[in-house]
Structures are given as structure tokens and as C-alpha cells.
Length: 439
Ligand SMILES: Cc1ncc(COP(=O)(O)O)c(C=O)c1O
Image 1 (tube, rainbow, N blue to C red):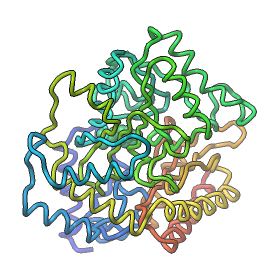
Image 2 (image 1 turned 180 degrees about the vertical axis):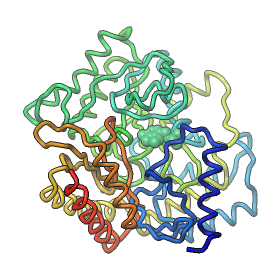
Image 3 (image 1 turned 180 degrees about the horizontal axis):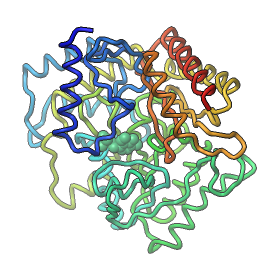
Image 4 (image 1 turned 90 degrees about the vertical axis):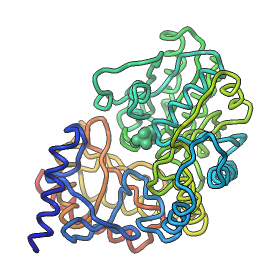
């Protein structure tokens, strides 16, 4: 390998270590800098090619260097890059119109920010303003962001830096069927865990809540997928105690779960507020909080607010182009078909490899929980790390999650095709063979 190529990587890793906070979580024993991408493929700085089945954390929704997105960005950049939310902008309002078309129910108005964290901050403040209540119910194993409020909403201890805890946020049991917190089994359990939301409201709040916030599938938590009835029961409990239902669609939005544009739509629940980011603009920083015109009015009546970078015209242009590609080439029906193929392949792998304890998820959001023993379900974080190194060697990028660091997250760009899914399954099979052999 040419020395200049090796130097490039070494320099990146050296500067990473010297100039960035050491708490940046980096995958792999030797961190992996990427140089460029095309479709579902990535190339590292040494020219090695990888299949990208994590999409920069479910964010590159229509693939790398997608022409429609790149040219929309170029065109907008030449017109105007920034004006702030103080001035109406064509890309901003056009995107808001598109969001209203895609969103379910009465969710018709948007407030754009720059991240999922920002979207959730907006959602909670909105719910507090609208209801006049302060307390919020979130779920254990949830992830909602990295601000003080985002970490406080989060229910995975490892992501709550420094023990920060703001606001009156309480965490209810989550519907983690594989490791049921009540040691029961679905469906004979009658979704008993859902009742914990009421128990938590009655015992740890004043009885009047502002909101219940949940991810339709817990992402960082390890693609934990609730039983169909769970979100309906819990959102009705929240409503009974005065709270709005916030669906955090940061990972599950834009068709990712297949068949529907948003994850909550699988549950027959009309959320009062939905938050989104990640896949919204194929990698451009954009967050969005959607609600009904009536609820949005409460914030207007309360105080002033703005977002300097929110609704940035370039990010909005990228998002509009991303939505157009999704509608044309990777709509929710197509994602469901592809997800089905991926799921069947993963379930076959579970039959072969004992370390795969659970296969779960929906659409192109599939997770594998790795265990040392299927009976004890003891988590296997070391095997997960080993699988990462093996898949890296074989040229496949996957993601990780879960409180115990033992859930493999598979979520390729939604424009992936059948051949690419078959390639990824083949690599995973080879890697599992090595990892299973080493256990
Ligand atoms: C469900 C969910 N909500 C919120 C966030 C925070 O988004 P961001 O990292 O863009 O602030 C994330 C990030 O992973 C997420 O998965």
C-alpha cells in the first residue's frame, strides 16, 4: 500500500486523538475513517470497499452521493445558504408542506431544528406549554438525545453522562419481550408492562403529566420492538392523566419500518407530537417537531422562540430531494418487501448459530441480540465485538446497540436492493461461523 495512503489514515487517527474529546465513541479496535461513498457502498481512506448496512446510524436513507440530493444541495447552495427562521424561505415552507402530506392524522405543522435532540427538546417544551403540566413519562432503555433534557429522557444509564437529571421525568418499564421486566410471556401476559405507565404516574408524579414519550421501536436500546397493542394502551393512559403522546420517530421515520411512513402508524395511535431527524435529509443536520395547528398555537401564545440554523435552506432542499427519492424508489411498501427478505435471512441464521438469541425489528430496521447461552440469555458483548471485527474484515458495516452492548443493528439505506441484501447476509453468515467457532 502506498505510504501516502497509510499516512492519511494515521494522520486522521492522530488528530482525532489529539484534538477531539476522548469520549467520542468509535467503533472497532482500530477506528475506521471513511473517505467517500456511492449508493450503499463506502470506501475507507486506504481504498477498501464496504457494504454500508448501518447508514451512519439510520441516516443515509437514500444512499451515499445520491445524485438528486447532491444536485439539490448544490443548487440551493448557489442561491442562499442561510437566512435563519426570522425570514420565510422557499425550501423551508416547501419541506413543511411535504411533511404535512406524509405525516399521519392532524399533524400538519412543523418546527425544524438541527438534530433529534433539538426536536425532542421542542416537543417536551411544547407539551408542557400546551398542557400546563411539567412531568413527563419516558421508558427504560429509551434514547432521546444528548442535551441535559435528552439525557434525562434517556433510559440507558451508559448514555446519561455525569448523572445529569433535569425536569420531572420518570421512567416506566419498557416492553422488552425478550427480557421481560415482569418475567412474563407475550401474549399470555396481556401486555401487563403497559400498566406500569399508570403505576409510575400514580406513584411518582402529581397525577398530571405533560407527555408520554416513546420510540415506536427503541433504537439505541437495541431495536426493542413492542407488542402491537403496547403504544395504544400506554398513550391512552397518558391521555387520561392529561399528557400528550410524543412519538420519537428519529430512527423509525420515513418508511424505515416498512408499510407506513412512520413507526407509530403500526399501532393505531394518532400521536399529538412527532419528532424526527436522522434519515430526514440523508445526512444533512435537520430535526423536525410536528404537531397539530392547535397545539402549536399554545407555544405561540406563550413566548418567543427561534432557531438560528433550524430550517436551513440547504438542509431543507436536501430533505425534499430525499423525500422525492424515497417516494420514487424506496417507498414504505418496497421497504417492507426488502425488510422481509432481510428478516428471513436473519432468522435462518438464528437457526444455525446459537449465539443469536433474538431476531427483532421491522422493515429495514432489524436487530440481532447475541447471548452466551439461549437458556440463561446471558448477554454476549465480547462475541458482538468479535463479529464487528470479522464483518469489517469482510467488508460489511453494521451497527451496535443495547444496554449490554450485545445487539447488532442492521439498517441499510432504504434504496438497497435484493442483491446487496444477499451479499450482506452472506458476509454475516461467514462472520458468524468464525465467531460461533471461537465461543
Ligand atoms: C430515537 C432517537 N431520538 C433522538 C436522538 C437524538 O438525535 P441526535 O443525535 O440527532 O441529536 C437519537 C439519536 O440517536 C435517537 O435515536
